[in-house]
Amino acid sequence: MSTPPVAPDRAPDATPLLPAPADRWCGRAELRADLPRAAWLALGLAVAGVPAGLLWWAIAPRADFRITEDGPAVIGTPSVEVQMAGDGIFVLVLAGVGVLAGLVAWAVRRARGVTILAGLAVGTLLTGLVAWGVGTLLGRGPSEAELAEVGAVVTTPLGLDSVAALAVAPFVALLVYLLGVILNAEDGLGRTEPGPVPPPAPPPEVPASLPPAAP
Image (cartoon, rainbow, N blue to C red; front, side, top):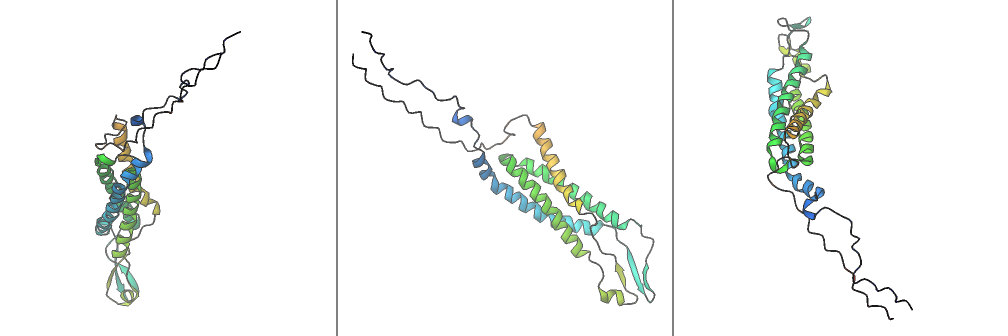
């Protein structure tokens, strides 16, 4: 009579090979931790649109006209590309803001990552929108009363013909930030504050040893 096989004391470990808990990237927790800094960055860049709009309004070329009985008469010899020059000045101002914004965002070592990149894109877009609003508000055209007053001097309004210029600041800012990413050889982008570490996984349950079978 053959002896029946005896059950092993413990089942073979069928747990798949997984990375250690400390080696896993807790992406959602890291993104949530960086969200306040990204929000403050976007808010600060939106406020930066005010001085950017003031600068655009101050240096953008415009033409002056004197109201006569026969209608507006141009003063001096303004360039026929005045409006295009206004768009060009707006692009240069936003490009400068984009460079500074990209450097500032990269300097926030504790929040380098996807969240701060999204805040940078949103913030620089708000910079352009605010600058556009401030510039056009201060550089609005003459009123009907001013156009009807003979002898009055009026100035052409400040406007933006190409709305695509609003993409200049986000493009330049993201380019500067991504250059920092390329030049940084570390996988963690040189973050000075490590991301949250997930709690260790519980050990696998080991089944109790089975009693030997009766002969």
